[in-house]
Structures are given as C-alpha cells and as structure tokens.
Amino acid sequence: MNRLELSGLAVRPSQVWGGIRLVPLVRESPVEGLRLHREVYGGLGAGAVEVGPRTHYTSYVPHGFVADWSGEGVRSAAYGTQLGADGGVPARTVRLPRHRHHRLAKRRPGDRLRFLPLHLALEGYLALHFGGPSTAWEEWSRQALRDGLSPRAEDAYLGRSVRGLEDALRAFEIHPGQCGVLVYAADALAAAFVVPHPDDYRLLHPTLVEDLYGELVHQYAWYGAPVPEFGARIADGPHLRSLDALRAAAREQERAWAEAHGTLFARELLDGSYGFDPVYRMGAFTLWRFLPPFVRDGGGQHIGETVTDHKGRVAYLKTFRLSDAQIRRGHLLHRLAGADWRLPRAARALGTSEAELRRRIRSAGFEALLRDRND
Image (cartoon, rainbow, N blue to C red; front, side, top):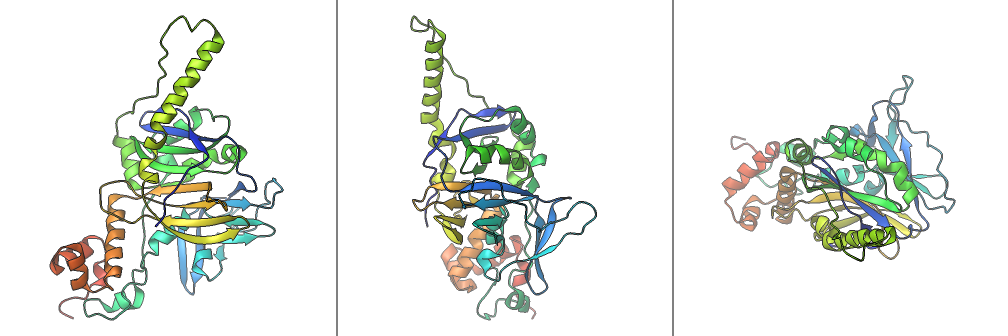
C-alpha cells in the first residue's frame, strides 16, 4: 500500500456556488515532457469495449484522453475509434489487447496513449475478485464457481445532474497556472482532477460536467445546505495607504488560507493508503490505477487513476468517490478472498457468525453466489 502525494501543487482560496466548492490547484511550473488532450466521441457517447469472446464492458464513455509524451507539444490527431458517432454511424466495438491492464488503454502512433478517464479505475473496482471462489467449497453455488461475480454493475451520475456543478464551473475564472481542482459537494470531497500543464487544464476544465460521480455526491449536492464562502479580512491601519500595500495584504491572506486549508481539504484523499496497479509505461511516466483498502471506518474512500513521473510526482490524477455500500462490498470481497472463500474462516476474521455473514453476502447483492440449503 502507498499514499498519494500532490507535491508541486498549491491550493488557492475556494470558490463556492451553493453546495458546490471548487478548490483550485496551481503549479509553479508545468510537468515537462507530458501533455494531455481530449478526444471527443459523438452522439450520446455510450459504447461497448470487447474484452473477450461474447464478453463486453459497456458504459457511458463521453470522451477519451490522449497522453502525449513525444515532446512535440501539439494536439494529437483524433484516432478513428468512434463510440456512438454522429451521422447515424453505429457505435463500434473496440478490440483491445488481451492483457487485462491494457483493456481500456490503447497505444497510438508515436508516443501517445489513448485511455478512458475513470474507466480504468472503475474496471479495476468491478474486477475486484471477479472470479469468485477458486475452490469448489460446498457453500458456493454452481453459478459462483462457473461465472464468479459476473455480471457486475454500478450506478453513477453524469456531472450535469450534480446540482450546481455546471454553474460553478461556468461562473468561476480559471487561475493563472491552474492545473487541477478539488470538487466538493456539501464539503465532502467528490473528485480530484489534475493535469500536467495549465493549457491542458483550460482545455479539459469543461469535461468535469461529463465525468461520472457517485450516488453519495449526487445526494449531497441536492440535499446539502450551502457551504460557507472564503472571505479575506484585512484590518485597516496606517500600513494600508496604497494599492500595492492592499494587494500585498490580500496576497498574505491567500497564503494564510492556503497554509491552513491546503492539507485539510484533501486530507481524506492524501491520508489514505492505496493499492496501485501499473497500467502502461510511457517513457519516463507511468499510468496507474488505484484502489483503497476498503476499511470500514466511516471516512470517504476513492478509486482513481494517476500518471506519475520517474520521481513519483503526480502529472495526472482523476478520482471517483465510492458510496458506503460500495465500500462495504469491497471490504466483504477482500475478507472472503483473504479467507480463501471459506465462510467459517471469513466469519471468524470478521468477528461474526456464519449465519450473519450469509446475511451480509445477500445484502451486498451476492445472493446468487451462495448455494441453496436445499441443493
């Protein structure tokens, strides 16, 4: 397990629109050697990705990102894959490499890689112990042994349906040097988004309303109360006799706010430990996806993907906040797999009875995995 670090990024005072809080992230200097571009898919953006014979990963895919480490610094030409293209062209099925890490990332001509934002992380979560029991223990059904957890599905909300998010992104100006943002709903961290260069952020800033957000974020935005705004308070005095002095005092307030809130706002993201799964090596950069430990401590937990350089510095980051139910399912699957799918052993590890464990498995939506007592 490792931690996320946002070294090289500084926070700016938050921007508030109702229950939505945006915390800008700025860099003193861009990450050299990597650029990120958008690839737009027409129509509704929905598509299917073939991952095996008669097996498809189907999801809402509004756009793709193209990572360019060629050093040319120009936008990549759009690749031919269209998911739900305009003009009546049906959605294409994309055949991706067999290696599981590369299903949703595809190399382009030259030093470029196309990947689908958040889908690397979601596919990693959905594939969590996907195979089910590895041994034919008597507790598990034939379906569990034959098909594992298939099919698995998770619900998510389009950013446009998160109340106030679209208005907030449209209303507030982008800071000089801004390379990312922390998005909060009712002051709960909904997502983190970081890119290597300010020009990339200006291009990709509008895509936040097309991203996926969890059920909890959607509920917080609709039912949460408005959050307090940041306000700089500058005491009047003899030292404020010019615009330069007033400007210096305002900047000092910004620095004080950043020092007090810089780690506070992203604490739940940065204090947690994650399991990182390498997806693709891009010269001096590596694309990873990560999962939390699924610890049931009541705190928010995130899945996501990131690109780091050879020093471990984050060049790209996108996260998805899991709901409490998703965390419980991940926790349960981890414990079952750790006990080699033996219910008595797993029950002891969880400090409960086998009957209660069966109830939790059914409550988590995995009832089909259990063998009927009458079989």
